[in-house]
Image 1 (cartoon, helix red, strand yellow):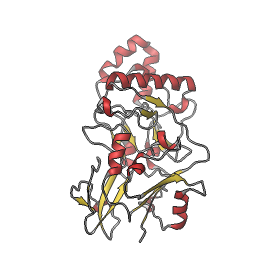
Image 2 (cartoon, rainbow, N blue to C red; image 1 turned 45 degrees about the vertical axis):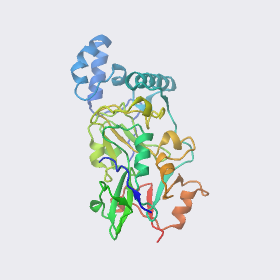
Image 3 (cartoon, one colour; image 1 turned 135 degrees about the vertical axis):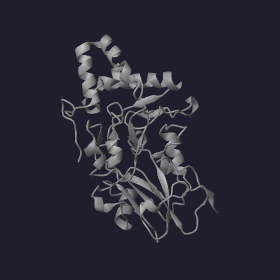
Length: 320
């Protein structure tokens, strides 16, 4: 029985020291301006800049890098973001800071023999991660590929016919959570980095929207918020993470984060739970009893663009 395809979505580690990023940036310049002028004059001075991309509060512009925040500062930020969600979207949200789990290295695998391109994973990502409804954004693209090639350039993400189609296979692509992520290396303000559990994250309040990381990613896995996200109050997912699915501001880059607000609590990614074919496997590869570890040890897995040396934590395999 064929299924109608769903939505197909839109298009080393450099850690800051105690003093924060040293590269010149818009954010550092604004911070220096704020320290010189004082709060009232600072708000007046930045008013023309606030209209360039998005409305930004002085508190956000002066906010420290995520890694420099202490517990009290994080709590204040979480409260502010919850208040902003209520004010701007009319929705109550519980936003938390989910820390990496010691002794964990998350990885994903997809059985391409089972994936039939129905797009349920794309739809689940869209809803779980509070994506802009107008653009139907998602972190996942499902490529309809001709059998006999792994050339992603020959894949089609805009198919609208019943699936699976004869002579085709389907390959979901999202952030590969690389061990050598080129996206983090090019960020001029160190707003993106790889965490100890293998997840590459973004500090949305530190990102300056230069899109260098988007250009550097060979998997086209990063998204830029060209506009303020539109999410109806009744559709806002209230369970949110500071580095994951909280509603991102306009003018920043975002990406898949393995649903860390779920997975760091022992749950599965939303895309996996939505998969109706059982094609997706997720878990801790450091756990010898995990299903993902069994897959890696018993299946002939491969990674995309291995020749680039990015060392993805995202694997693919066929049963036959």
